[in-house]
Image 1: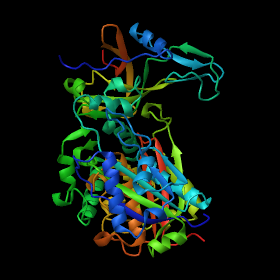
Image 2: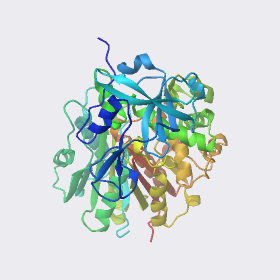
Image 3: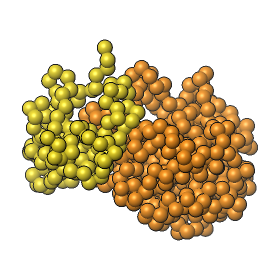
Image 4: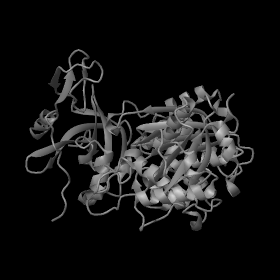
Length: 138
Length: 392
């Protein structure tokens, strides 16, 4: 059997993020006193040290902070995907996260600052992970 | 600093493949080579700083290597521990040893490491990827070491306009240096051209194969002592004039900025402590996991203006005979990258250049060297400034 790409292993802290992703929603911890995101999820806000975290829906659009087109896959499970794009995306209004860029028509045209929008990729029977694709591709 | 801490003696074994030796045995080989090379007796050593062995192997890491090293030397140190900060751990060992010597807590500290890369294949690719990535928020996206470094390089290139040719020029200059080093692994491969680098297969943009360091095995030892003891071992030791460190976010996706890898702050501290200006640095040894790192570090350490580092390579300034020689041993890309011990190599070379012991590749008139090292995915940063005269 061909090796499969890893599914995330949720922790007590991150379970709401992955449960939302499985429903096709984006949800991230938000520190009320700081009025800012705490991502990845942590027990304490790294700015104020507080532990009162709410969950909010970030924007589903953003821009590429940086990226790499991977021609030699990390390991066997990604061999069929190569070349694939790993990127850091800053969502409009935050937070920032790592993603792949999918549905990219021209890998040579990926740029820093490029606009992207949310999509999802199935991982395992019950999970899916957030992914991003260039805006305007329907 | 009190007691003028200095690198009195440095020894590195030839990078290569040592299938018959595990990392502990490689540590022993380093100790033997060190004792063969220098007029130092084990009883002269009262401090040991060692690195863990077996990181990422199935057997797990040994985090009590300092005990084994002390036992092998037959000494009972009064200052000793196993410490880890990836490739930055060795510049940090020098800093910690110097602090102990300045405080009178040790007289002579042996800093030692030996490294191997875990065998690629089986499940180890996944294991390494998970170790260097955030396990939940990065690992599922197919990351591994070259990709994570590429994210920094691509951002720097987008901001400064640097090109693949600029990156390739680093590999080319470092190969020129390697041709002058008897122990450099890539010496036998002969010179490298920009076209060779750009023609090698793409690994993770912007890195081609020859933009990457060469995974090998090896190790080194550094003896840090007071200036007085150092002069008894070596008539021209390398004094520690300044050091700095900063520890950035552990996971690349969490970085609040990609404008700096972290060298800016570490170098600022080191320069402030040394009282030297960047223009007073004679040679620079800059950790080069990948070709982009020395370019970024030249700019971050203040040795080149923003976006100006590539010119130093294209003009020949960083190559043999140039005005600002960089990675004069060939760097990890041409000398070899000795696993977790790789952060030793640029400290060893910085010291050898200041000591005037760099053989055919010696840069004439070197009296100062800047060494910048990083660990993890550009998360740990440590800078040393070495000189041929104690500060006072």
